[in-house]
Length: 63
Image (cartoon, rainbow, N blue to C red; front, side, top):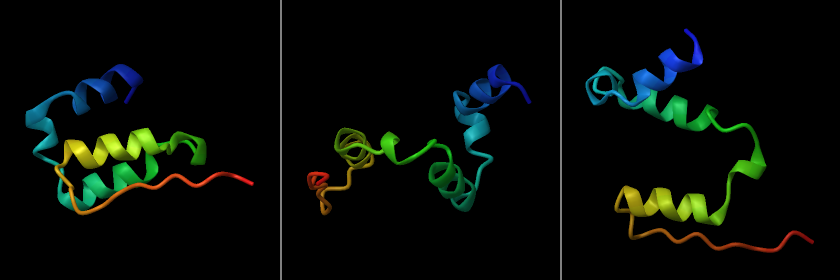
C-alpha cells in the first residue's frame, strides 16, 4: 500500500467503519513518530474533538 492508498483509506468514512476499536487504538498508539509529536495543543484538540471534558492536559517545563 502506498501513501496515497493509505491516506485515501483513512479519509473514507465507510472504510473506517471496518476498523474495530482495538484497530483504532493500535493505529493511534503507533502512528506518531516520537515524543516531540505530542504537544499540549494536540492533546487538547483530541480531547475536545472527542468531547472528553473530565480530563485536562497540564504542561510542565523540561528542566
